Image 1 (cartoon, rainbow, N blue to C red):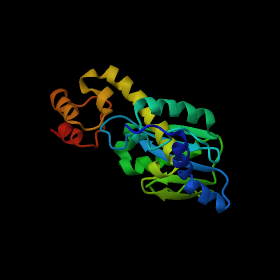
Image 2: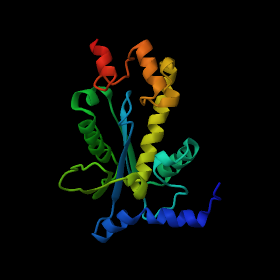
Image 3: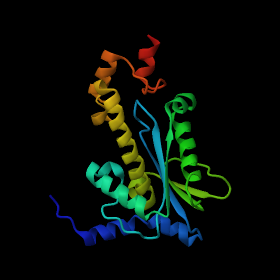
Length: 216
């Protein structure tokens, strides 16, 4: 196992502020990162977070939430909430997802997450999705932004931890689906549970195989 180096980690995290630094060179002062968690899940809300970090804030091990252990995510979650200039996390519920489709619903969630910030940014970095935040806010979409931008990485952690905590509640309410393990994603065990028990109230009706199951 590679030994952890604080010095190397500081350099790595410093490099994650590249896109924020470019925005500041263009005259922007408050840069938010936006990301979601749960877009590909078969159940529950998508959680969308927006975070404005202080310039060049060092958060140890800051990275795309998918690359981190649950324990490290929890530590970073608390640090981000304590240090951020502003942060928000909003839920895009099942009804909205099933009505609009997952892509459009996530776009709306990103707009709401930014609008929910206590301090409004003048620039927003998003993970892959191009979003119109209005005339007062410029934005830039970055492919794999959660691994390349400190602000988007922070938002990914807020969204992921918040949704995982919800999934733990779902697991207690619907223990037959194993949500504490699969977080609502279509694992073999989860699909087998749907086949055996049918859909539960928090399954997304517009997602397969739930849609076909309900059509029978």
